[in-house]
Amino acid sequence: MSTLREDAQSLHEQLVPHLPDDCADEYDVDALETLFDSYVNTYRVPRTQAFESVRGHVLKEAGIDTDAFWAAQRDGERGTTDDPLPLAECTTDNEWVTIRAKVVELWEPQHESIHQVGLISDESGRLKFTAWAKSDPPDIEEDTTYTFKDVVVEEYEGSYSVKINSRSEIIEHAHDSEEAVTDVGTMTTTQEGFFVAIQGQSGLIKRCSASDCTRVVTGGECSEHGAADGEFDLRIKAVIDDGRTAQECLFTRGVTEEITEIDLEEAKKMAADTLDFTVVSDRFTDLLIGRRFTVEGPLLGRYLLVDEVGETPERAFSEGYQEAVVELLAEHNYDGPGLTAASIEDLPRSYDVQAGGVGGD
Amino acid sequence: MYRRAVWEATESMATSDSQTRQGATVPDREVAKHVFAAELNEATYTFKTSQDERAPVYLALPTGERANRVCVMGTVTDVEDVGTDDQEYLRVRVVDPTGTFWVYAGQYQHEALKKLKKIQPPEFLTVIGKPRTYKTDDGTINVSLVPEDVGIVDVKTRNSWVFEAARRTLERVGSARETSPKVAALAREQYGHDGSYFAHVAAFALQNLLDGDDSAANLDEETIEERLEEAEAKGYDVDGKKPEQESK
Image 1 (cartoon, helix red, strand yellow):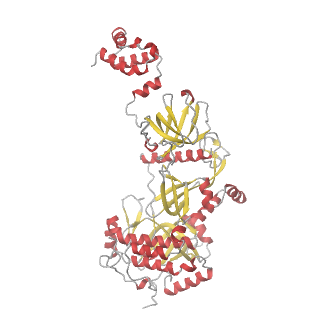
Image 2 (tube, chains in turn orange, cyan; image 1 turned 180 degrees about the vertical axis):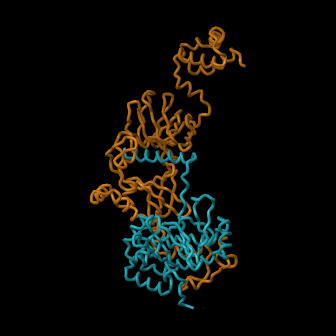
Image 3 (cartoon, one colour; image 1 turned 60 degrees about the horizontal axis):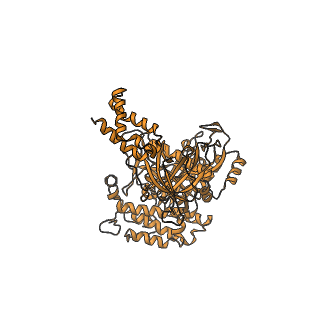
């Protein structure tokens, strides 16, 4: 076991960067050793508890900023101001990180304890951030890139966010600087395929209007706030499937209106005319099922949050099918018979892959 | 605040996802394969990958891949109630360039049933559903589809599917032996051939697509019906019996 002197030395090393100038001498190694001695030998503090007890005592007595002190004690902080950690990698709860990101959106804080809250984004992804009022953080602005030094990753029920604390350092980057994030969240996924299912709670929905709640109101009740009137919104939860991958996709109001050409007002009218919400999702299903689209957007959990959407055949077949067909057959080295057959029953029932033209090799 | 709603909504989804990853089971959704009627109707062998009663049932496609769900399109030529007096059971014929899909919808396919009842043939239809096999009295095995969802589509969408189904068929012929060797071996054993001639079927369907290309964009009902008659004359769609061959 270490001697009291050694403990005093290592504690001194930890404390030195944080000691206010005027009391640096008060807590030199000798003074700390005396303190240890008094704790252990006079006040019978168990040896194993001594280090933490003395440290706690000094932190308090010397008025050291504890947030900053503990931050500095954490080793393995990832990301530096020169080489910040991509947001997509901020997935360890309680990890201290340095990141560089653009403020995409500021939200209205729902409580006075929150100074600012919103979304930040870099090339790899986006995260919610919270700056607590008690840590007196500087104001940050939408659409500006900052380096956030020493922020803490928080995990809550599987989703991550970052917390700005009093130790955090926030460095603003000019819009035209090298550091400025230009492409936010380009870690997008593209999925092409057919609409094979429109899931429940698609179409015209109501969201709970209680502050800080966005749950879907079903049967006039919010699962959190009970009876609720709610606000109308449009969305589609769907499966787009190309025969290889079945991707669940979330279309928010904007893209929903774009692909269905039905806007919120019209949807409300449809529902009002029939006294039935489900006509909207039925109509969406009729419009979309079986159609082939390419969607693009970031992955959030199981869902692809659709930013961009386009119907696919238009591109490939705008000039007719001739070219595409010839290309496809060539791609598969097809030179077999059959293209002019009046009936497929006339086709040979077997075909030697190795010798013939249907090879896939 | 609207964007926030999106964020929060998806966050809670991410949450439920992480929970499933931790053990609760929401199995991955089975993909929907694109298969021509000619191939589907020959896919009479089914298998499971586990003993579990609820384990998914797969068809072994002759081209060597498995299919638990399919996405098909074609022309509805007939909707018939083959159920009892008090229980509706619809049999729907959907014709693609290569043959007929037999779609059956009963009380448990409520949504699909509702939509199928409204159809006035001919109309282009997409069917997303699960293939089922059943043995007829004379011992032959037929393949039918239980629809999960159906929808009327336009000719462009239908054509797009024909192209896609041809592409997937050619891909399976070319590479199923490598990409799904077990099913490919099983199919070869069960059907006695390697399914490679479905490349011809795909090519045929593509040719069909080209033949209809010029007028495809504005087919009126009359021409559709003419074509259907032609098709029926060629024997694609005669009560599910083996088609008569007219050109021999």
